[in-house]
Length: 79
Image (cartoon, rainbow, N blue to C red):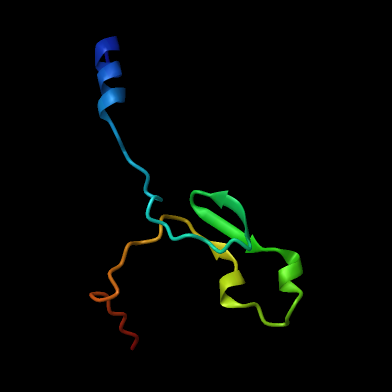
């Protein structure tokens, strides 16, 4: 166990940051169920406007932070 002085210093010097700080801004029409990680669903009145759900209203389910990917360097190869 840490002594009192070491416990105070540990709390003051330890900073884990926020792994969700770079997450994208979410569509305002999504009702958030949780904010970190973000989980949201569209409002029911918006879902009933059309048979097809628009992409921006699709359910968002995240388990971790959204990765910060450089689109100029990232390539997805499907084979």
